[in-house]
Image 1 (cartoon, rainbow, N blue to C red):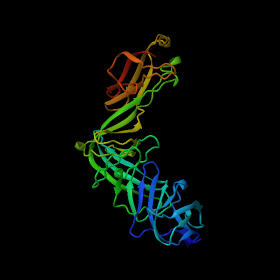
Image 2: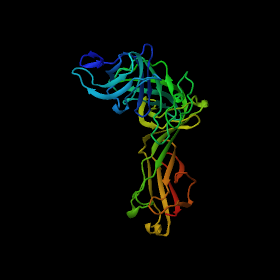
Image 3: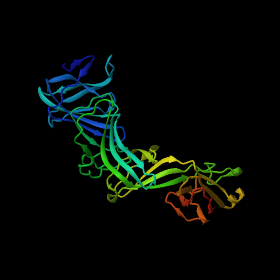
Image 4: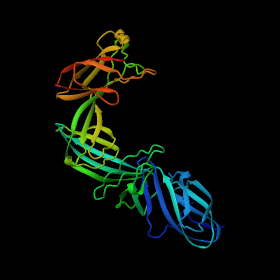
Length: 399
């Protein structure tokens, strides 16, 4: 048997890639990226052994080698993926194949595998103005190589990971100067749905690269407080036995319309955001938020940080025995401890939670305007002046 490899320290140098053919790297959004290489070799007839160095984060079961020739292809007899930890050098994986060539001569083999720790996502920075109506806005695609492998001579594209069996995937960002890709095939990642990064040719070990999507000096934003009310007893629809109140701390929310009029109108990917507040005396870190992304025409929404100066307490206005009749009167007490007027959005869950008792609870009457949402919640919106306190009362049937 012939062993096609070159010793390099304690490891084996990969057999050479086809001249001028870049390594294709499709970076998934869910920590799974596909590497495709075309390798040219001058093989002897019969069985021989080949070896190739792989990134240390490769999924061994994903390694696949095949001959691209339509007739009389080289046959892979066995495949082994080994972990190597040479002294004084970074660990790596090595694939070793026993192949059988039907005849001597040059062959082009295609090697594909999946690596982890190479991923991409959206990265956002916002600086809210003192009055809160506008924000400095920057959006980027953030690409991270968390492996110890040096990817060189690359052709990089962004691709979305599709959950197996779900057919669901996030949309692609629209990079400046690159046409927006078509929608992805629900069955998987299609080549037409990839977003290329033509300027990116290499990814050194433990490195990161950011590519801008948008940079705006004054993005119109809506700033509000939202509070999702919680139950005292999570196993009951409304259980405030013993007079214990329920409630939660309101959260600051920033919303921006992803429209051309606002300077956006592009596919904004999922990612992380860091939000700052311009206080006039300097910038203060407001909080970090998870961004679910927004397609053109949708609303980019960030839940930024809690606001303890605004308190919300929920309880019952009548005796707890009233609930036995299927009717209960509830109260929500809100107090604005801030020095400015603020809108507070309150969300309460009316959908039944107890097993065997389906159906939707209904509001009979309420002291304030409300809106029923599709997910079974009720929404109240109130605007409070500094130091103002408000009590919302509403009666619910069907609990």
